[in-house]
Length: 490
Ligand SMILES: Cc1cc2nc3c(=O)[nH]c(=O)nc-3n(C[C@H](O)[C@H](O)[C@H](O)COP(=O)(O)OP(=O)(O)OC[C@H]3O[C@@H](n4cnc5c(N)ncnc54)[C@H](O)[C@@H]3O)c2cc1C
Ligand code: FES
Ligand code: FES
Image (cartoon, rainbow, N blue to C red; front, side, top):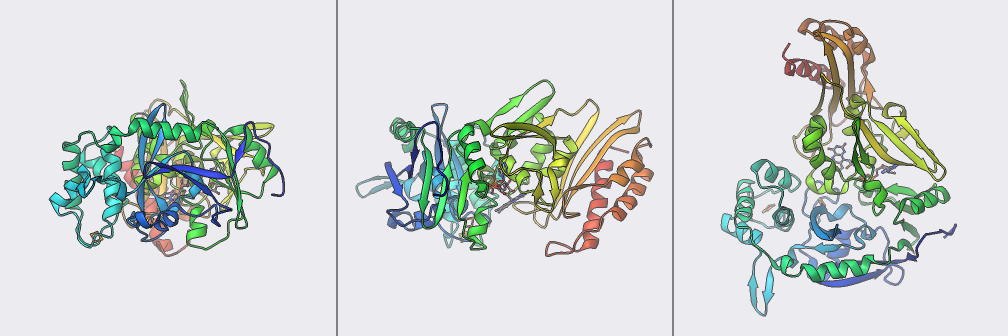
């Protein structure tokens, strides 16, 4: 360790979690394990958890789906996630549930869980490779009382691929299991599990792990996070790790020093004032999606087609902004909303418009000692329409080829304010400034929109890559503007 860390409580080098109803402690140094060992690889190293499968190791297939149970306000929340994207310390203080834990065993008697029974009933499994992953996504939905409609079932299963069965028997099985919902062994055991999770979490210690040529820090509060950020500016910041984990699993990079923000409660804030909604940078995109359903229609629509539920349970808003990727889906919409970021360091707090935050291809205005604390979205002005569009090869679980965030305010049919922001059209998320200037003060009609389309095509010089050619991107961007116009009934 090059620099010591100061913490308000203590530090611990051990990760603890509940598995098979027992508290498991991992001492990385003694067990000769990398701190960035993925949950998938750890589980598959155990004789009793081979049901967790590796398909792609990059979040795309869902074969590795497990359920994580965590304490929130004294209750247990169940979430499905991709174990291939999770580093072991990220599940400190939580319970891991795999497909092997679902059936109840009494001697030689085995009673399948209702979701397993339903899969058997509908013939929802053939070769079986995908089945543990589907089962765990279904189980998480079974344990969540908020959903039951077909749309949410499809949304929940969108992160699991099956090459054999077709999806209908699996969707049917999910519907059946939700219809016959009753208490299960997890309900009967809930008090014991809560006790175990409280026992692990009571110390409030930050994790500080040094093993196999890696340092892994997981502070428990903002003060410690900022101290560590200042003293270790070279550490790779992670939150959900859905972007960074791929550097290890796909590019085989050695991640020498990690600063994991996922345990910092101050980043989980969700606050609504008269004029704005403030999202903590550590909120999961699934939590943002659920909130946005009532309040921010375009953001809700965007998150419905963002990756999969397993990924959204991990990925954060701060992480999507922090990547500064030209195809980060939230960026064009945040441009359209005129969002602001709160950036904080040990002795500094400043607000920056989202457009000023992105300074180049995957480059940001973040200083070495700062993190993104929150993202504020001003409530759209009266008579302002905000929309998001995404063009990708598949509807579900795909990265954008072109995306767009538009905002328009009309006064008596005349354009008073307009933002046309695009992803995938340049090295950074960009506004079609000339097209916007052309439309300002003009009648919002088909003729003017078509002229604006011609102007915006001349403004961009997109690349051709594996996702699409330059011509397609230009055409798609123009068509999105026409689509926007047609939804507003010209
Ligand atoms: C299968 C798959 C599908 C995907 N689909 C989509 C998609 O549809 N649309 C899309 O836009 N993206 C998609 N992604 C990319 C990724 O999931 C998102 O960018 C996600 O929002 C990243 O969030 P995270 O919390 O996991 O980030 P992390 O991986 O933890 O971090 C990403 C970057 O952001 C920085 N960062 C994170 N939090 C902060 C903070 N608070 N302050 C400062 N910097 C911070 C980190 O340092 C890092 O550089 C997909 C990824 C996968 C693997
Ligand atoms: S192995 Fe494919 S999503 Fe994890
Ligand atoms: S049953 Fe074979 S991949 Fe789904």
